[in-house]
Length: 79
Image (cartoon, rainbow, N blue to C red; front, side, top):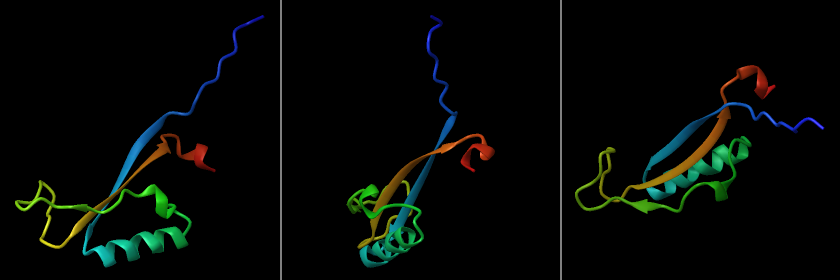
């Protein structure tokens, strides 16, 4: 018998970062959930910025929420 092959579609990584006050970040996540784009549990927990910030434009009191998605590199494969 010939070997079974399963060719997976090529995928690319798409990363989303939400930076803002905790309540604003949660509101954005809730809206994306209502649009059926991403489930709430897929996002990281709120990450506090260190006192001196990070490379991103972190401000005191703001948090970072992150979501990692895999997308097909062939747009017609999403249909």
